[in-house]
Length: 330
Ligand code: SF4
Image 1 (cartoon, rainbow, N blue to C red):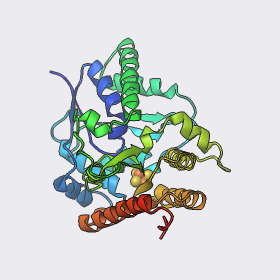
Image 2: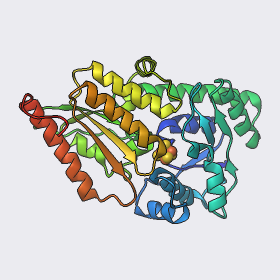
Image 3: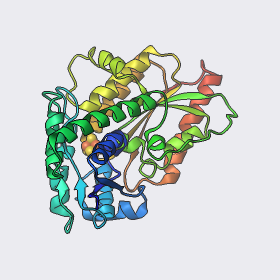
Image 4: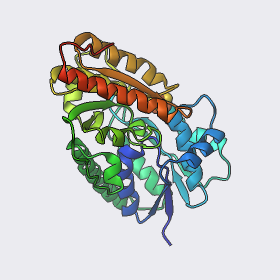
């Protein structure tokens, strides 16, 4: 019987799932993914996680519990860094420990560290570590890693062309409503787990699409452009997400086809609390593109969220029609 590996549908799921899936399946394992986030998963996460944690971490806990009794192993890598000379949020580094010490009766956790801060070679070491836990030989692990990196690159290409990660992963082909109004180009900046988890963001992307919006997410911007722009900052960003968000914000200043920018952040997120502020200052000082920050947490009411989103879109449309008369910043 195949070993069953559980992958929680949270945090970096919408960034790396195609890579992880291909890797484990190439090694002969079976994958089980937790369900889509819903009230039950959120409640399980909120009850079992420390109060101080941000919403995405709480949701992740709920996904772990959703899988716990269905799999042989849980895959919760210790993600220290996913890019050279940068870190991601410390919560990712401590995630396997947080889970292990808060939840009981879990299957063994594959908690291999992934730390690409110094060198990309660490990826092979990490793959070998995972392979050894599943008793796979080194050649098979190398082959599986190469194939999974190919799958990952293909996935990223699709995203760059405008496909949304959940649509690719769930093999959905959304039919867009026939636009009754001019199509607006709205750029959405946020962490993958806030942007692509429809429950966390209260179906924001669907609502935007249904309002004749052409969505551009931070993941659709070419990485080279983001890097080039981020290098113009006075100080190097050492947060992976900070570089992406700031590089994207600076890129917006060069474009004249972006009608509005939405920054989605989690309440209680240390990284977002100052990156959102820097992004806002850059955009507001150097352009007149309408900008809004939408903050989400487990208490966010959908009605209030919808009102802010709709008001923002109305303002963007009004500006388009009467550009000279409507301020973008209130
Ligand atoms: S970056 Fe922010 S939202 Fe993401 S895990 Fe860290 S604290 Fe939570």
